[in-house]
Image (cartoon, rainbow, N blue to C red; front, side, top):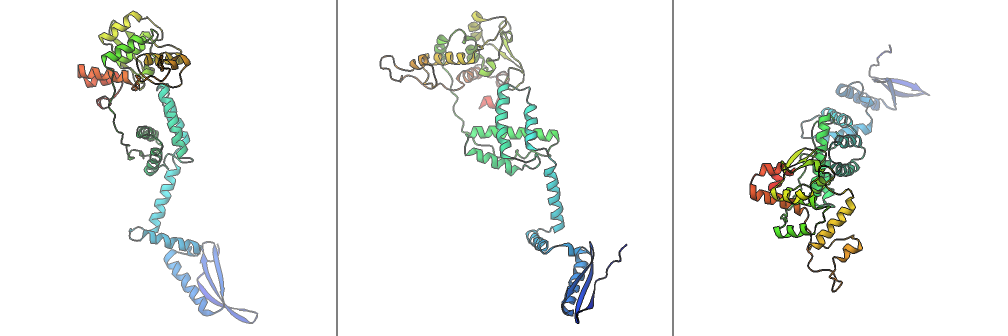
Amino acid sequence: MPRKATPAVSPILNRGRTYYRVTFPTAAGRKREIYSTRKKAGERLREVLEDARRFGATADAVTATQRADASSALQVLAGTGRSLTEAARFLLADIKKKESGKPMDKAIEAFIRSKDASSETYRKTLKSRMHQVGKFFPGATTTGVTGEDCQRMLDGAAGRLSPGTVGQYRDAIIGFFNFCQHRGWRESNPAIGTTQPKIRQKDVAILTPGEAAVILANCPDDLLPGVVIAMFCGLRQAEISRLNWRNVNLAQGIITVGSGIAKTASRRVCSIPANAKAWLTPHVQEAGALWPANKSLARAQWVVCLIKSGYGPFTGLAPDARALQNDPATGKPRADLVPWPGNAMRHSAISYRIALERDLPRIAYESGNSPSIIQR
């Protein structure tokens, strides 16, 4: 075992001249430094002894750059009552915490896979949104994302997207980090505290009985059952496109919207009112798709029905349909066409039921929404 050096100054003779050697212990072993005068050597010895007293025998291992960095760090901590050691330990724990999470791209893949039981439309939309989230956090881990990071992402989106869409992104990342919590990939949800975008509510447009009658009169037989169910039962178009006649029971007056049909992937049973039953009876079948399999053709037929009913103009139409939007006498665009209000049939069905039955919880359940959404 090497002998431990004792800090000391000793004279040495080199080519007829006296120099002074300072010897002291270090973490790597004994160290020697040569000075031209006893005064300089004494000053260095006192410095070594003071450092050893304050910092231990390894004080010499700290470079001048590190000493300056430590001094700056102490200025940052001034007035906090915290030591440099406490700050270093906190930083190390934070680094380890951030590095312990799951890579964001892998976590996003797992989150999307967890939604396999949801509707195809929902999964497609969620995948698109989470792809954008992943691009905002390249190389990050689930524990490395902070609330400020989430807010910064949403603030950036607010400059490009509508408040409603930004709100949907916020819902997506809240759901994602809830998923991460359940998997043990982080302790808390950083997106919970982000700001909910303010969305100006618009008045919901509904059809009058006269307007509904005109649409039904112009509706082709292939589409009529689906249109009736949308207009009087309030199902979503995506749900209607997945319905089978086996789901429709006119005798019991119910439509069963299975988990594979519903937007929310949650089974529900909807009432068929008397007027819908009357319209559906001549068309009822034991089984088979309720909506035409050729979605493009069905869409084209529906747009023609709307134009004939006084709605438009629409773009991207076939020549025959486009001609319907022009005045046959002048060839110019028809002045009587009015814009088709989005979701008008679903909104009408729900609004009329609320007015007639005043049973908000039941109507919310059958509509596949929360009471608060239906109320709004």
